[in-house]
Image: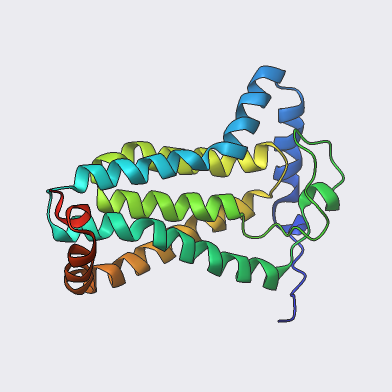
Length: 201
């Protein structure tokens, strides 16, 4: 695959520079909290997936299949994103614009577009919301905060995370439609193999 060597500085480099400058002048405790969330916040989506599965027990086969499909969907979306990221090969803004950032700049060939964290967050939020609408109130804001945090710490341009969220969300929605179509077959197979995991008993 030939990399496109996409240059993002001309898209919103000015906005990125303004945000990272604001981060430099923000209190250290707040920067630390944002950095911790940015690095480890995806774990929240794993917890929400477990909650969605638990709440789906006894709520019907279709909803349980969605709950079981959610982590698989997120993994597929991530795999697709890795290919897209390699194709665009956008250099990290902290290397192109040489600004001081909250966190150290990633390695030279660790590409920027789209943001893996934003893609995963967008995909997880949509899949979780489609499984359990009540969890949308937690999943959606968490996805947006994850995307914003990636720019704040200096790892991504704003367009990296905006496209990442949209891409992850759209692909997860499409994959969930496929999961819905296969729900009857998956439900029968999984119910036979795992019993209470699907039926909720």
